[in-house]
Image (cartoon, rainbow, N blue to C red; front, side):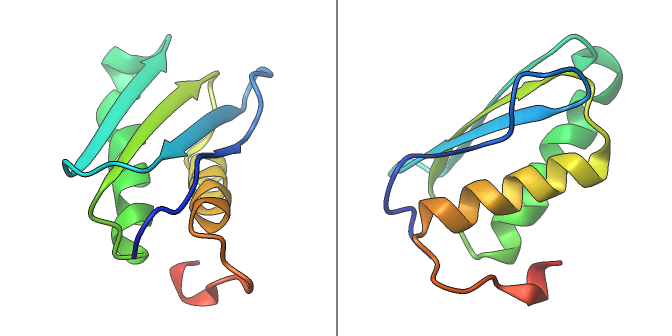
Length: 96
């Protein structure tokens, strides 16, 4: 699937995460900003990549600004950002 537009989901509030997705042509690039990057950076990135893979997205620039979000919040925000970026009309329930 192709990213059609820039999209954003989430906030910069405590215990949340903000995920921004933009079109790209060079694979998937994830820029992670987090105070807990050393401890949980790999898991955060893996969760985002899992959502992108579920939508068969091969090219995207992703920026993740984590403020201590739980894994399920990261997944939900990633799904919301992808759905907005691909201009989906209906939610793809299979990725849940």
